[in-house]
Length: 167
Image 1 (tube, rainbow, N blue to C red):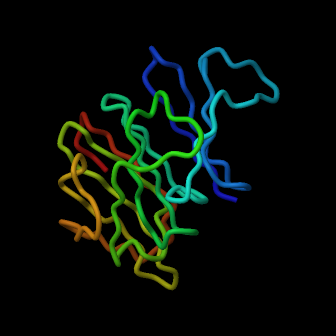
Image 2: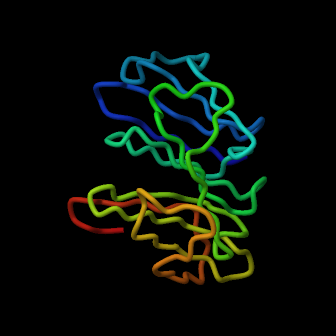
Image 3: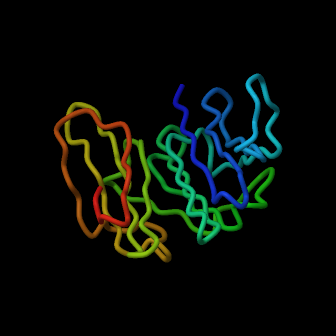
């Protein structure tokens, strides 16, 4: 089971978690004050394009959720608008596909200031890497990455420090 947790701005205090057993995404409210113990999600985001997610990135400034999928949808990134209010069966505003991502998206990071999406992918047997899309706000359909960084080692995610412009 793969689990990823991401958050949204302090003012909203929402926490999003991939539900690796049954698919979909759980959203918890009041994340800063959640006490120890078991909690029921305030919202559950599902849908055919989401399937069993393998990566998650929240662009809080644009209220957008990027969902990577490699198990059900052959390595796609679904882009969901209005992340703060999504609930139930969600239809992506757009979906990014590519033969580069076909074996599975294992990590997503977005630099919304520079409008760049980074999608870490796993191909198995080598050839893992990071696909770079320099049009994160509009990329859709069968999109060819602007760059691909091949990494001949296991990869399990990608993170960005926008202030330092470091991946």
